[in-house]
Length: 259
Image 1: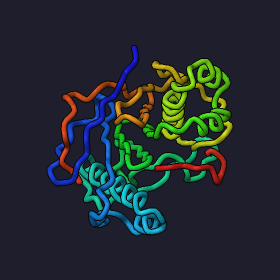
Image 2: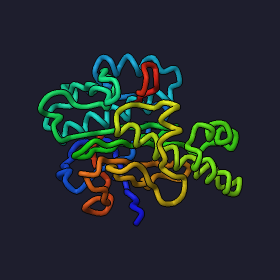
Image 3: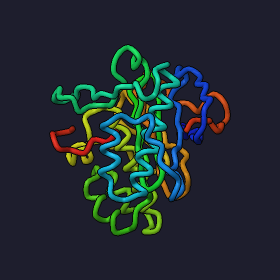
Image 4: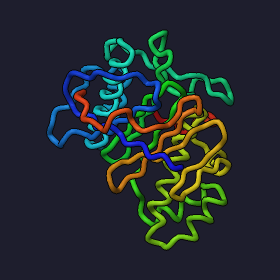
């Protein structure tokens, strides 16, 4: 049976009261503030502020600040550590042992709280789970991008895309790519051409993937595709309550690894 996870909506303000993570991943969608709205960097650390300042496009900078501020505020609510005091680290890569694996909260506060963050074209997706988790969000691309990027997929996934009508391929490609990136982020060894071609997740309505991991598509706004992957010890299931509006503001070296 296909599982679809419905994210909670993240908006600014105080008062988050998180339930436990035992029933599976909790998800939030984060939107960038409207143009002209001052950016709130008060909970970011020095590294995050430098990264935000280095982004040349105002829209990218606004989304980065919003997404990483939201991540810190949510993690604060689940760990009990003040948002600005949270220290983020990288776990060892499962392939080479170097510190560019999954992101984590340093120290005892991070025990049992795993997270993943993805942003794409004005929208971000945040996932928390009791086991290693990966979340990914992809804007549905143009047909030209699909033709070029699909060469990096598993041969069976390419065949699936080729069998579809031309107008259906962009959405199927985004679905496939988000599942694949979510899995590679959950596994912790990053995004590489070899991994993209070797790992099969499918582009159809039913996600699938390597044994030991649970895959699900995420219900996100039209024009995007989202996916969440969790190590199978944490079952993928919809939130315990209907979606609510929460009040809270490797690969080899050089491969792209995103938080």
